[in-house]
Length: 616
Image (cartoon, rainbow, N blue to C red; front, side, top):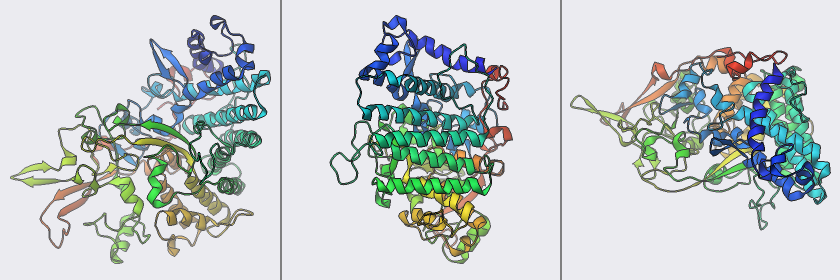
């Protein structure tokens, strides 16, 4: 039953934490520590240490402290784990250099390894961590009235953070495991835990309401943003920059309502889309009011690499610097770059993803018919496929002949000499972690390698302004059509979409694709895929909330086979480019159970009113 399930999540964690002698490890009441509830919750410094366990807290695993905090829900932190795969690699977007657990999951089998994403403190215990921090937030809110030496600003800040993080944790649980009870009070072992799930939409509405409450407290604390705006000393350098703000709360409210309107969760038809459009427009306006803006194309990568925070990020996690051979990069970077023959895997975009990058004239290349039309216009060639593409293609993808620091032009090809295959440097067959798709991911790479031993800064844009424009475009198109807008909004769906394209150096959506809601919907989906690729797990969640996953994940995953040949009229670049399916062991399989992760098998059989997810 649910009581047993949540107790399994909470009680072992509590027992471990109660063994500690530090305030940071204190939960509810810890006689062993010599602290009373009054000691912890009445004094600002103690309260803050208790609360900040949400961000940096650990739990004891044998003799080692392991992260058991909010970071487990951060996409970039997930990418850094030792299982060497990303959420994108569980879709048609990417293939991993090595066939490991990612391919097992993509092929429809997760039950044997789901513990790595539920409780296992050595991996990414998302499920356990989110319930843990929900409890911490509820305990903080329950006891904040005891706080005596804090200013009203501090108290409102704590309240804002607690409501925000509680909503964020519920949202991450929802995205991966589906609808949940919404826990707003501290529940003890003797309380009734066998709680039915809310509906999917109701779960998201509760999240949006909590984010709204968080924003109101942040506004009272004058913390709609934590740092000064652009042009002011201290801009983007507040020591508390990792904490959420009022602007971020409004943005997450808008994201939650977009999910509520999506086909997987929608219960009220057009009204849900209208609410999402209005919330996203409000979030855009508030972000602009407080000085946030889209970065220029030249600074675009500062949202991810090379700086601590950017002014497009509404909330972000600065992960610090990572050297080229840092083990955290084993999942993102391939062995040929990291200098590891066997231990690295690396994320490799599929040809399916590359085809989503339009020509620089705005022509889609998703289908054979699309490519034929672009070829007829003289804007695309299958034997010179990387010429004249969306500028983000060159930012996001390493392709054959792409300039790569330390390698000159990327050599992702083979040639045949005396009947034997000779491989280019970036296809060195002595490495286990090399691409099988013909591409490497560049966007979040940082340009470092064994041949370019730099140590870039990594930042995870947990939510940024660029997403809000796309959220608004999607919702407004569904609610009001391409040329419609939310009440009071000064942008139509089409204009919001084109705002993102303009920043990227792309032309407006071609008129042929902007004439109806259905046609523009496909370009909005494509634009989201390109603008948000390899960040935040957006694509993994998007194809599910759109209910496109069954078709997408049942299709064939393609690679680009690149053979070096003599230059000729047929092969003007000196390479023969051939689309080919990835090998059978790298193809995807889809079951409808894959919309959500299952719980551990031993736990799901204990649930009664809480209906468990199907095991797969």
